[in-house]
Each structure stands twice: as structure tokens, then as C-alpha cells.
Image (tube, rainbow, N blue to C red; front, side):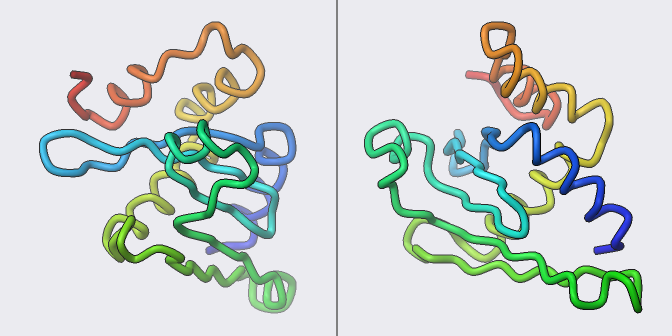
Length: 136
């Protein structure tokens, strides 16, 4: 990832630590809860998070490595699937790319801000609509 994008991601995640992302599964989707405290992102099933809170086990973790940010203008990204029974490689890749798009795209980021700062205004169906997913 380009270091400029990483710096924007750091700035935006510092005030908006959480978000929810749907992942297509069969005829529907599963909802993933994102916790972003860079250089780490943790993805957990929303239902597991609701049931266990901070004790919920992560399904997928992401770490950003800044060692080449200054010299090469790049930040390396590593993702590790913790529960392969809960998330496939393709789903994890899509989840990371989609999460980054919500934090880095100005219009999508408005939904992240709403989720974190104007919770009563947030509608999950707006995320589904943005991703062109069926809302039920």
C-alpha cells in the first residue's frame, strides 16, 4: 500500500475504531466486526462479538509494516486467517480490500463516521446498498 494511503488510514482509524462489513456467503451474508487500531486490524464475526465482547476470538488479523514507508513510499500488509473454518482466503482478501475502501474513500467513509459518531443515524442497509448487496 502506498504510504500516503496508510497515513490517511491511520488518521481516519484514530477517530473511528470500529465498523461492520458484510461478507457474501451463499444466498446471504455474514457480518464482520472490524476493530482498527493501527498498525493492527482485527476482524471478528459480529454475532461472536455481540455474545463475547472483547473476549471474542478474531477470525482474521491484519498488520501493517511501516519499515519502507519513508525510503520506498510503501507500507507492507500482512493478513492472517485465525479460523480457516470461519473465513476463506478469498473472503479475507475481499474483507480487507473492502474495509480499506470504506476508510479511504471519502463518500464511503461517511458511513464509518456515522457508525462511530452518530450511531443512532447509522443504517446497516446503507452499507449493503453501497456494496450492491441484497438487503433481505
